Length: 336
Image 1 (cartoon, rainbow, N blue to C red):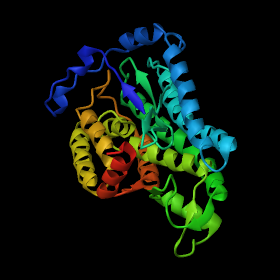
Image 2 (tube, rainbow, N blue to C red):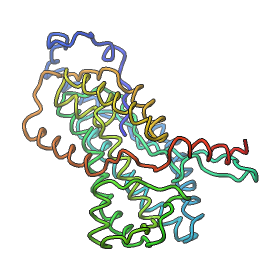
Image 3 (tube, rainbow, N blue to C red):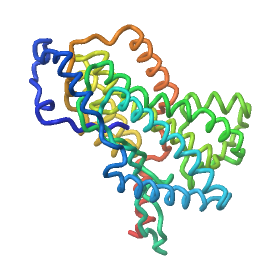
């Protein structure tokens, strides 16, 4: 995920949706001077990034090591999951450096561990040990081409990295009586997961299910992260892509997708937190410095590819738990 923080003058844009509401493109000399100033070292102020990366590795390892495979499972989950997340964020970061956009190194988010249940066992608030990663973008985008490339680079890079992890994860999985994949919680399968499973393992007999190992869990989470970030909302990766291609039409699309997410909340509790994030990010996308420059047909084709990737990775029921089951599980875990 790419998180933007633009200078105040660039965030305070007129709310009029007409073309005239966008500022004229700056001169070529202005942009040349901006790029000539250079970018600061990526390691400046990166100590928190390093610390939280180490904490994320530890958290993810502990989750994986707590399974049937022990320490080997911990190592597999770390390598599989963090390779996907790192590829996603470095796709954003490298694209930012290419266009002279000031961005931080990836910032990984470890899941907090809290004591829960009658025995007060320490468990992570995320069953995979992390809430993902992001980079912070600290300067404006020069034009919509740069905005598009930065937005789409992360999901595509993460998707490519997820493919071999997915294949290894499906081969690693065991066929067991149906009853859940992650700690007794069933996981919804996106289209790509279903296709690869059928291709490599054949049809699973009735009453049976694939029990995911560490690599399969890493691939599942990687596909979920890719789909969520490709939603065309606010300043998510998909929001960047939508604004770059649609410009003033991106805001209505963002509102429609946010409304659909509100409907999904009624289906599964998993969507509650993500819907709140979408509503916070659903504001109007800031304009780029040269917003009137076209993006070209090639990027439109890549945008369609991004839509295909979203369809392959998305599932409306990522975690197969109802609201009633969620409430009962929360009461049991908290001892209420």
